Image (cartoon, rainbow, N blue to C red; front, side, top):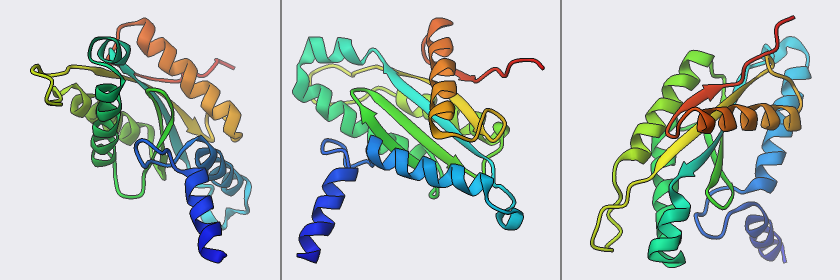
Length: 182
């Protein structure tokens, strides 16, 4: 019975296609990281970054080659993203071609460097056995805790807005959330 409960928990927090943690687990981890911000100074209120990202050109791949190739591409993207980040960073697939990365104890400079590295890794063509190399891109937006907020939904909203700005200015780009002037 314990094994079944653990298996069910695993199914509930993992994306079936890529094996990455899913949106449910993202919410849990983000709540935990935000609560640590508010905790007494014992942990120093460790800052962290939230990167929202989605693939540029994924719909075209699905339309041209079919969903089986699209699924294979998503699995390959997940592998590359895991390799693009540090061991303690957490990569989540939250649906479709959307991913979120949590970067604990990360400065804005480090987050920028990691985001650009991820964009480079995803821009390398994929060989999926369809007779042609598949090229896609990655757009990324970021938010930083506590500078952009200390609540999970606010941080995700800020990183999403930055992602939309990155896509608006041209695909394959990274943008940090712009804080309002006081």
